Length: 326
Image (cartoon, rainbow, N blue to C red; front, side):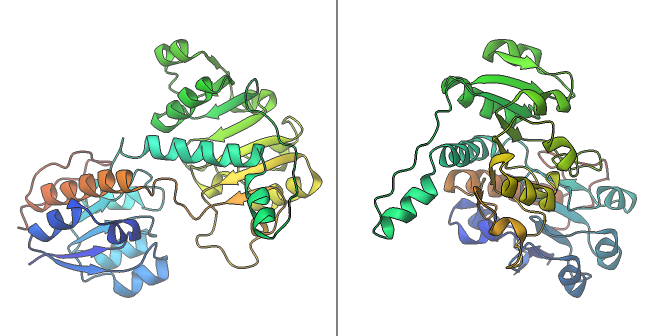
């Protein structure tokens, strides 16, 4: 009986057919409340045939300790920056993922953060709950220029919504979607730096790489519009925490709305938790009943396919699929 490690909490906490599909595989399933750190993963590595994982730190050290028993990595979600893909490929461990399952949900959350910042919604709700009838003056989003860094599935959904709100759109992507851009009126920027210079609102929807890490930092913030609103529903490490906190304190950045942090969960003294005009949500951008079910079903189907010796619905690397384990 194959032994599976399941770490993603939204999968565990959300009812749906994915639980029945997982149970039907006849595997032993061990659950942990992730995302797990490298140290936590190392404590339990070596005893599982497969990981059904979220944003756990699956480093080379974790994979080395997990071998040779570990045969399958089934990622719940899209981003694989927490997984050492190179090491997994070298060790012949196939890695599946779930593209196209949460773009609508994350785009809606991005807009929720933006509107909350423009209209001071969190402050206003808190004032009323405290018995204060304090009315702040906000701003409209109509007519503002939104710069979208990364026009993949999520970035495109943000663009569609921004157009509906009457915003001006400018974007950057290495693989420019010409037909989409023409249909929705997205002006092509020649660089990320150009997006930063012209946008009133900057929305980040790019992968985390060594090139994109800390792309929003003191140097780039200095080139941005005064009172710029920055939205990050991608990865916390795209934004330098210290520089963002300072820019918020100085008033250069008008607001920061993020669903991700460089440390999750954050320590109590994390700088952005006390920064002004800063809204942080606990990585729930894709956590809707609809999206969780889509992700969980695809992740579980990927797992099921590989356990049967078949190709998953979507695979990150080219590692061979193991012989059937069930």
